[in-house]
Image (cartoon, rainbow, N blue to C red; front, side, top):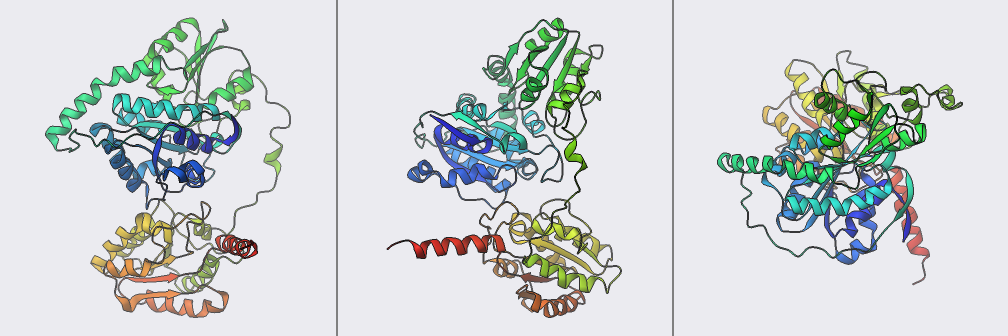
Length: 531
């Protein structure tokens, strides 16, 4: 049957139909809808497939590896920066190997629509020496899941599947099939202990599998030729294939690549038949660099590194057309003349009241710095508050505030959200508590993971207990309700605590107005339903 699916939904359904037993993820745009689709799937509910959110990407990767060890098929989902969080377990999983199929889904975000950087997750797959799949459309996203799980089990290695925002959040008709049964539980009899002596042996075994991975890519149906007897050779990777077809039609000798390692023989053949090669890949010049190394410095390879394509941001049919001298279609640039509308915190959001109290205080201290974190509340860096001095990565607010305080900066304040705190802020707070560093930590608790759409927060209603368990002095732990009428009291507490020469924690708690509205609608609907 045919279904109209987002790229994320096609990945999710493909995994379900491939016999999935568990999805492990931390919400992050543009990957969030994969896990949400599985959570609401009737098939997943019928089979009781695991689909609870994890505390962070590292715990997700490790739990999925444990499910694989037991013989079941597991999917790990995250956005590209989540790969940094799970890197230790991810890279080592290639050395331990897997038992049940294990697919790691990384959703990259070229143009940084909702991200701090443009990193390309294919580098992680190359680094770990494992196969990589990169769909060019929603149908391939669905089809690749079964292939990826099968290859994972055939090689006994994890497989990386990389998508990008444009694919994740666009819809297309997808021809779907029947769902396979889940694997039986068959715990591995292999030794997954990376003591150096064992790790050396397993790493050698991973290297011995490289020809098998290369052969799988060379014979993959997702890699194909489209020959047109032209002087220009084009290598189109993943979604870049669509930009090439829209911009150039059937012009050029085209090699589509959606499964890695690179098919070296095909690339050499393309080079022999062409005067130059244009590499079209959305993300960083991963393939362009490899092809330069493969063909040598004298062969003309064009792409992002050469300047023929933009070095940053998403590609488009226009940028691909321009790379071969074709003018852009009229009217495509009109949107650039629209006035900018920077994002803002929702009206009535509790974070607003937190910043309302905070800016009153920091205005009194010219040397004060507020270190921010990843979440809705990062918008406190923009007008009208302009409160934040930094936002680097998940959990960095507390550790950066600690480092600044260690350097002598006073007052040093950290603002972190509830979900981010449990994701990677707790360890920083433990460091500060162990040294009784004079910082004030504000855990702005809106009872959800708000920025990605209201998923469950791992530490819901546990934040005071967590802080106390880490050794926080109860006298300097406060819970307040962020409302306009309470701003003077919150400001007073902040003022008192930044004067304290030790660690203090303030937890402003009020439900996100978006999730509160959804809960109210759901409650009303329940009341209106006939008994």
